[in-house]
Length: 190
Image (cartoon, rainbow, N blue to C red; front, side, top):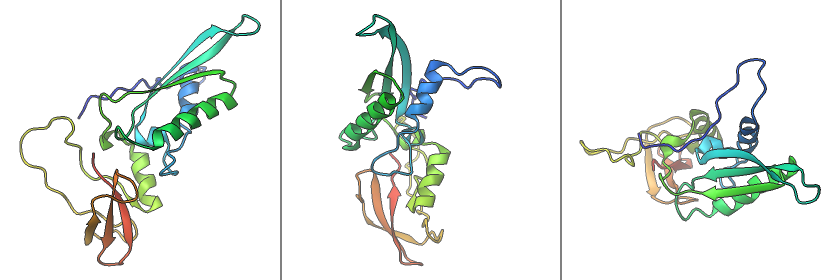
């Protein structure tokens, strides 16, 4: 599996107070992907880190929270990143965080291996076939990987056919089920 750059704060034991990073991570994790609104950026695995510091305030000289959020795009030209950055800034401003810095990191490159199992289940429920298998991004050597059948998210048939390698977004392919005849997106293994 490729190296994952994740700075997810660990969970607290029952009765313990959440840290500032845990609260900030939970807030960032509510932001949805603008192209697939049933998935959060945490579900997709693009939320990489959240750090909270305190900086001097502008007016009264007191300290105010400053948040640094690190995200990794699903691919380097992903047009959704500007919307995600804006949505993160808005979500944190709404909760009283006056300073939010969203950094985009390209290395290590995102892979579908970083998607959560909950995210894959949400894709299936939404009518998009989730990625199947593991990414080759980790530099695997050995046997040649073969494509497996893609299961129809409508009827669960494996009798499906790829219509085009690129679907509604670059990270999806367009398939059709040969049994129920429904077209569907497949989130490609990247």
